[in-house]
Amino acid sequence: MSWLRRRGAWILVLTAIWVLLNGEPSVGNIIGGVLVAVLVLVAFPLAPTPGATSHRFHPWAALSYVGFVLWNLLTSSVQVVVAVLAPTPARLRAGIVRVELPGATPLVVTLVANAITLTPGTLTVTAESDPATLHVHVLGLGDVEEFRAGVADLHARATAAFTPTPAEAAR
Image (cartoon, rainbow, N blue to C red; front, side, top):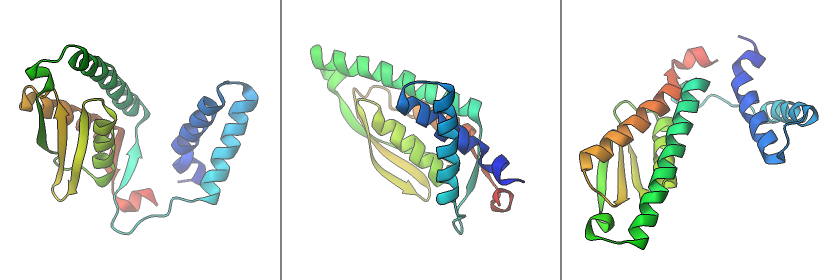
């Protein structure tokens, strides 16, 4: 498999970040982004880590993951604003919920934990690797199982976006 084919998704992601940071999707900006992305990937190669799991990136599943996280950000922001402006004991009920992420790789655990912490009203307190488990502080905690189901959905979307592959296939 050629270098360009293996790193194509990274080039696209880095180019998109470059264009977003510059704020103008012009042809010159896109070409500059591709050049910077290739330069970054050549200067800082992604060396295989012994014992680490490699992942295959799936852009459409990643889009689903990002959309789900953005939706959670929007709805949680509204819930926190309502809890602050019109507090009730139920809206202010907080607790720590233990959530297991069966079969999650370290990358997926990190993605899920960061998405949870980014969401208003929730904070990942601890992340354990074996077994993959998160302890999450939740403001406005209602049904614990409903919260766990939401995290399970987030976990499934993150896993679909970054599916683990055998280490030999990544080389």
